[in-house]
Length: 407
Ligand code: UDP
Image 1 (tube, rainbow, N blue to C red):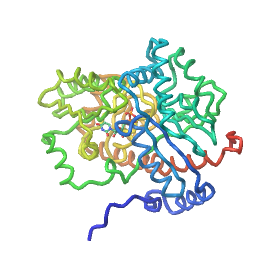
Image 2: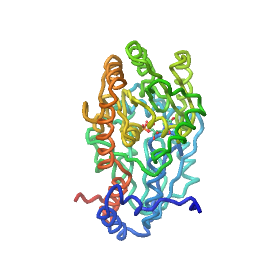
Image 3: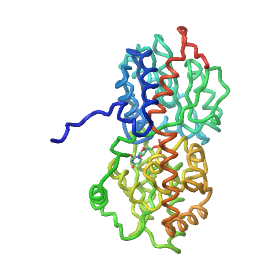
Image 4: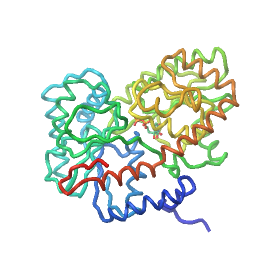
């Protein structure tokens, strides 16, 4: 008889990370048992943050740390402001009017009234819920986890936000190169993926074909795929241009799959602006279908992630885990995941992207060997259990007065 749906437990990761690592994590968790933790972010699906919080919060509970996950609510104008902030933190201009600040702070104050964050540890993700810190009397450390590429933020916006950031007890950034000059201690955690999620687990040939057939995706030619929120930082237009160049030399089909996160009001506009570029071999889909993401990453001859800015780029990790040959923009976290020419390619222009597409479509052996190395690199560095352990170490390193003790 089939087993009922089972929530994954830490022990099940043993084949990937070994018994010693499992024991070490369990040992660390024993000292933190019954800690009450809350994570807060602004969307329950549609981006890397939700993707991480889903398995991370389950695993923390599995090892005895009572961990909740709250999502702030906001009107479309609130999310339009926070998306502008998101863009400006990655280097865009912003007209930071008093009205924008007022809406931002008021919506967060409303959320503070509805959410009772009297936990031992509170982890706030990204800028949207940042001002929550002003509304609670801390019972333990508050941590700000910023997932963005903070290497060159708009200065005016950063000066405004840092007054919230500096009230936190620790800041987690993805990479050291995103560090800011602030008094709050900063630590660096790279994101990670869950090999057991619907997005990443093994699929049978029929399951994959079923998903592709469902959306009418042809498999007669090699597939070149980019899967990303419809966001201009992901450069979908650049991907189409590169594909147009590449298909002069090789036959292939491009699939752009995207979703629109609830905290990203620009997504529809970006998607609609691309529709005119569609043709028989340029397929654009806007759906939230996790199994389709999985199937496409597995079926693709080439996975592209031609981002212009990228805090980390979980889509790259996911595709590498599936043994795909990935072409990634030489930016942010992508350039730390792909070792150029070894386990994928890094690119800085449309032309280079086109060239690499042609090379990979033509050379199945190269795709295989790159994909193999890619999977091994994810196994070693980017599985969720590594991130879980980093959180445990961070939690354990606070002294009674919430000061972070560097070990
Ligand atoms: N994603 C998805 N469906 C889509 C597009 C993206 O499920 O149509 C997922 C993707 O698989 C990944 C996450 O959204 O897990 C995107 O994370 P990433 O770090 O690549 O970018 P972000 O959206 O956080 O900027």
